[in-house]
Amino acid sequence: MNETIDLTYVYDIANGNQAFVLKLLGILQKNLRDFPIQMTQEFEKKDWHSLRETAHKFKSCTAYTGVENFNHTLKEIEISAEENRLPEEIHKLLLLINEYSLVLNTQVSQIIEQMNAEK
Image (tube, rainbow, N blue to C red; front, side):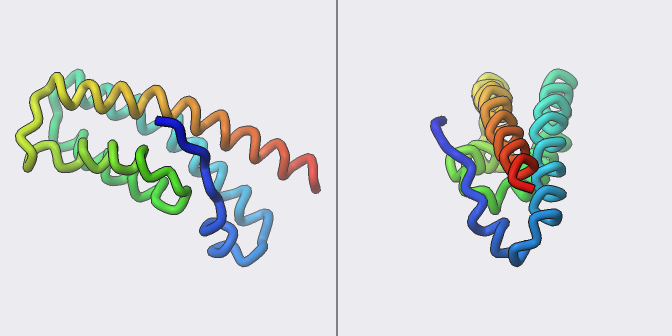
């Protein structure tokens, strides 16, 4: 996955309120750290239902950031039961999510630093 976060929609929602954008970015950053860990734990426990629910929540929090391939991968995990995906297939998807969460988290950190520097 080679995507860059696009915050156009987030800025529209925030109506130019930089403090609100920073708050939303902080929540996104926390989710980019926490959800991959949670999903990995659920996968290791073979708790498929919780894994699918967490993928749905994660997808919801990144839906307005323009990372379509990332969200599509989360959707693939979310619908894995309907698609009869094997654990090996789900694991590959999860590895992509874990890897790309790190990339996105770095992007968010850079945006936060830039916004704070512009204050």
